[in-house]
Length: 409
Image 1: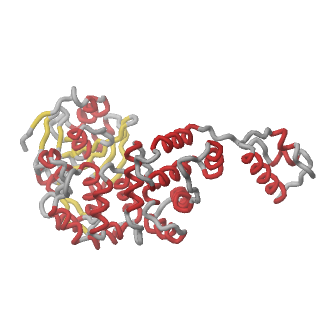
Image 2: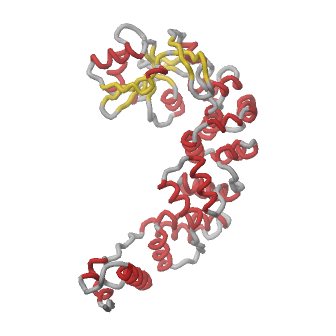
Image 3: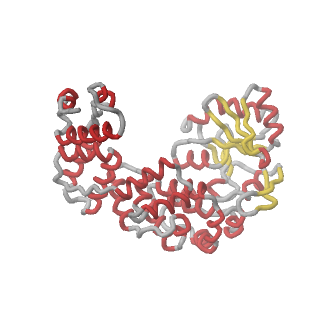
């Protein structure tokens, strides 16, 4: 496999970081055994931040593990039966996978055989843009035509798209996720057709997998055209059953983009009906955490209806009673319901004030009431709520002493 070009570590200083250099010195001390592969290479070529560095290696995992441990590197056997180990070097984790081919697959898990052929390893991967290999000296290898697809911002399956999808149904969602994050213009028609044809395979995926992918799609800059295609092709129904139409999401996301914001759960809430049953359904379907369900419920069910002439006093009370996140979401929803240019200065002022106002802490506690002769129990709670309501109605000006002075036995 010949290198097609070279990239400079001067332009990509992440390639010279000591942990990565040490890792390659350990694995490559007797020859070219290891190369970087996948997302780190793709993102480097796109000029994006490098988050994870994956390594493809000709050594069998036991040999890589042996060499790393001998050098004092902590190793975790994260996926040993599939040829994957993780080297932990300070704050850096490197996933190292032996070159392999998938001999059998049930649509999610494959039985693998170790090989010594870079091109064969590339051909079993999902997309051309993820089958680029990079040496530490900057030599770049492109066995599947990924460079052209990166230049065109195109997501294209390697080989037969139908076969790639049947090997792993998750690749349907990954196709749309990468289209949303790097795609420009129309999607690859062959890949799209294969995804739509095989969308029934999404039913076999776990809720956790569905959540991971839809959250990444919702986070993307190119969300709206991609989710439109997913909706029209029946893909979105597989992930978010009985979802609302896209109108509310479209206006909300367009405004978020203008403001440089991205709230994934808020975006998801725009697709849900305003009832608790819808929230329960999606929480079970996507296996959401209790915290995520609580936030979704707050986003979907809030009753804040705001206008561009809201007073600062009403802003303060709304934030105190509903929380800053819900208030900001309500601002963006109300603003998005209007034409973006309409009253934009007023809405920007409301948003800025809501983001900066320091939320005060209610200065009275149950022990303060008990110290004044109040008995513990439900009555304490009732009086605390009444005091807090009076404090909020005073625009948070009542002092602790003034409130305690109102207490009667």
